[in-house]
Length: 210
Ligand SMILES: C=C(O[C@@H]1C=C(C(=O)O)C=C[C@H]1O)C(=O)O
Image (cartoon, rainbow, N blue to C red; front, side):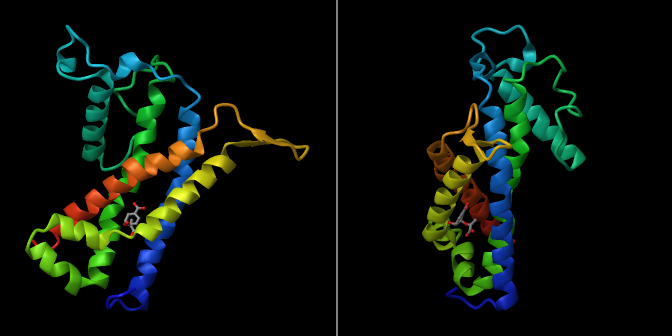
């Protein structure tokens, strides 16, 4: 590490990264579960005309997602689908898993706050001028570790391959039904999860000196 954190600070970033690594397992297992079900596209489409007032301007997914997020913010934790009053019991499985999957993704992305705090504590002198200048691009560049991101992409693809296997009692290993494509998991991290985590890091840092 180039800047002035002591050994304890280094350990903190390491331990947060360890947690992010463990969270990959949950995310990939959730994906494997989700992928068993076909996409229920009507759920994601904006109805052309709807006589249900709450759906004006959005899909059913959007509505359920918003309500769930609001409720979770109110109770201060994530709700299981069983606890969630916005999920009637008779919804098909192709609808329930995507929102059930959201807490794992949301948790991972919001961990960006902890990552940013540790980076700020480790390298305050480097971050401070960019925070004072509210320079998003410079902050983004400073907090980005491309080598770490490359490792993440490789590791999640490997995990997806291994977790997608079915282990039988007679030492046979075969591909599980509905297994997730490892390259898609890598892309999900590359194009969505890591950029959003970094966005949280930048947003946190911009307010760090308020
Ligand atoms: C989370 C971190 O910040 C950035 C985001 C990463 C991620 O989302 O996995 C990985 C490396 C960094 O570019 C980190 O440094 O560990």
